[in-house]
Image 1 (cartoon, rainbow, N blue to C red):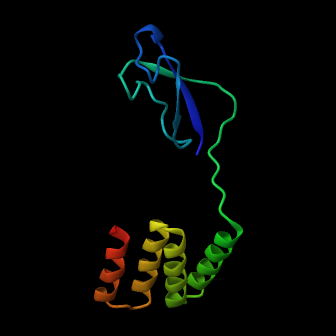
Image 2 (cartoon, rainbow, N blue to C red; image 1 turned 180 degrees about the horizontal axis):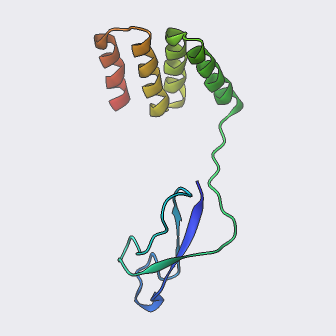
Length: 123
């Protein structure tokens, strides 16, 4: 997602957030902010250097994600669920844990079994 920069139209009255300008992460299709989230004064988006938030996964994580996706494409839901579940425990990723639960449901596991796993997400 792109990072946009904003500046106050009235900097001398702005809060700490917009006094010197601030960055805001939003999708390309999102409308530009018109007011400072901190104080509500009017702001404008400014053209700036290119910024980007980059998140790189480890090669091991990429391989596991690819294998899970392969199992899901092939309809091997229990294989995908087990792999996602084990990997989510190792890397502490609640999103991957939720994906594992969805795959367990598709594999036909009972609700009682899934509730046990769901509780481990909340902890």
